[in-house]
Image 1 (cartoon, rainbow, N blue to C red):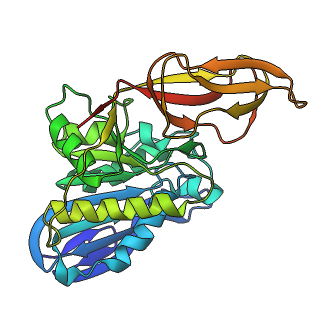
Image 2: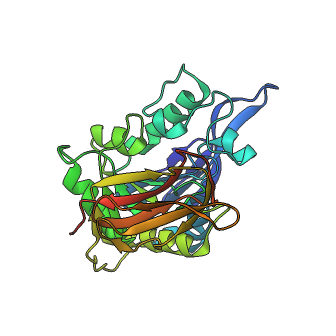
Length: 319
């Protein structure tokens, strides 16, 4: 059976690329998101993938750029639907939020066909997403520094929590954040429609990072193999799971020096970072309030009073 996404249309054993129209620019030109359909030779499940719903998060695009050329439709069962760049307007300016309505795209799902620019894009992508059996919403930790992880955002009481957690484990970054996400996230909205969804957060950088992209590519192929799109088997490794965060800000302005590395285990009372003057004079030290893992840090060393510095993931276990 032929499968269509926007102008991309592929019969069994075919792949096609095209555009999914989502509105017009200020000069009246049509806006179309880049899309692809990979239709397997044989029937099977459907996987939906998207990247760059935040316009400066490019590692997901790097994953798709490497995954698609490696897939032979004649060798897969089922269908893969891909939206390569969701936040079209923000991507053009290399910024996080959609500049047309100053909105973070991943707070607008399931969207509104008659709404704002972001709501219309969300609605146009939500429809093919929830037609699938599984969803991978590829992200990164914006331009901050962050470990590679996968987020389960539906909440532990959700009926699909176990299925989402299993999908995160199969993807296999090594770290999982299992914490209910904000309203409007695709990984919150799609499970309500019965589709297991996870949000791989592939590091954090300016531009893109090769090691995080490689992990993302491996994760996608883990999913394709485990769920029967490709022949073979995947041995799921235990994942380190966090279920909360402590966030730390600067007690005063100056320059930050970290005393722990990303991914380090920290204990309550361990020194996380120091703030000094430009001359190296000590101003403040900040220690961890709880046991956990240094999960995310700011990229630039200069801070003002109260500005975000880092996050420690808490409530850690293995599953």
